[in-house]
Image (cartoon, rainbow, N blue to C red; front, side):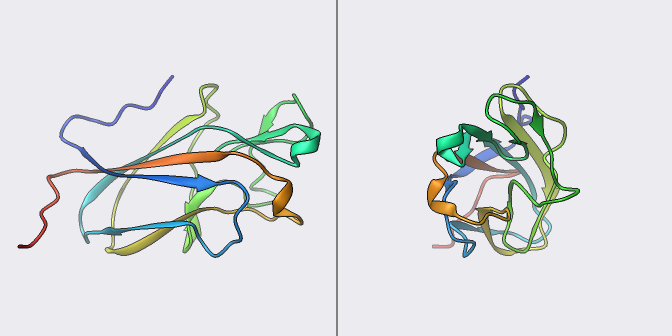
Length: 140
């Protein structure tokens, strides 16, 4: 079931998160301290493209066409902030996940974080949408 952002939250950004980046980060957005946010991650890509292993914001297939697994006990997979990965929750067959949190402020870099020995054999782009709990004011 798709994740639904509650009423009263306004989308302020959408970030593309490639599955074949270096771990330097791929996209960033400023957050307001004390502000409530909902992030929504969606899409799939592949790791070891020639083997057809899928991945999404939290889960990966150990073998092509196999069960989707959360391997955080042995590896750190998934979309998170450069400052640390967080759990997107239980596996969703539509590959849409949501996360609510209150920001400590500052600019957050969003990236696909995982241990990989060869990034160029990955393919695809996941998407993360940022939603704020109030209208974003831009000083004049």
